[in-house]
Image (cartoon, one colour):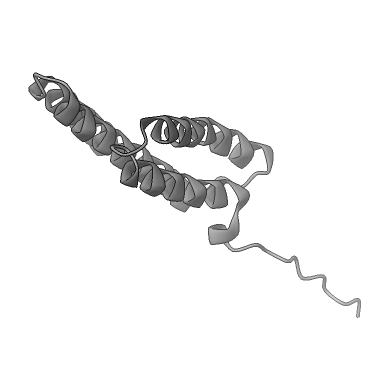
Length: 116
């Protein structure tokens, strides 16, 4: 009998796009921790996270590493970073209610999209 070749499978948690998603979480945590003390560094880190958001989907399709875990990680990271940004903007600019209304619209629209 011929030996069977076992395909080495990478864990979904170690997919390249998911690792980039973890990096986005880390960038956002550091960015929001520094948002009031260093606005320039906050802007740079948030922008890098924003660019990584576009790159991770491209990498997932390029390397055929699309997963439900990655989609949820991306969506949750997007929602949390948007919520944090809008909460900070509501503290910096008046009237802050506008930013909180945008936050409600963002959460409601994504909830309706997922529910549908």
